[in-house]
Length: 128
Image 1 (cartoon, rainbow, N blue to C red):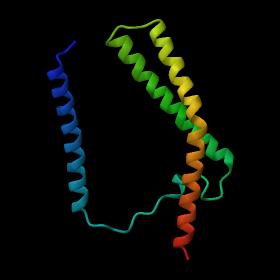
Image 2: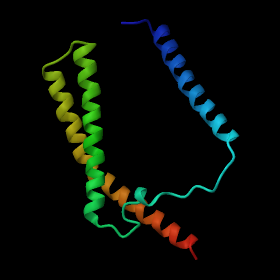
Image 3: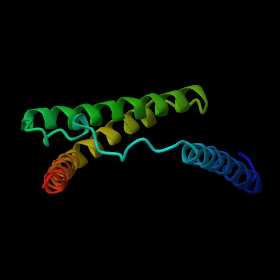
């Protein structure tokens, strides 16, 4: 285990590198001339274009499953490859994350529906 001061130093250095990279990106983005104002693409608004509930559910479930698979890849890769911890701990991580995603999925679906409806409402008001 690393000393606390080294842990804090590593976290701060990582944070400063990420923030510096993002700040540089914003600086470079600000130097480009603006071509036209940003408007959300229709493909980002699943129900705005009159699509069905099935399309929204497919998008939300696909996002949740993709996130779960990515999380499990990171967890298994770290705990098997780096920490060498397996067995019941990994099974608990797999089932616990699946339970949390299953519990949060209805709220995520509702929030996605609300955002898509709100965005289409804003777009319709701008069109007047």
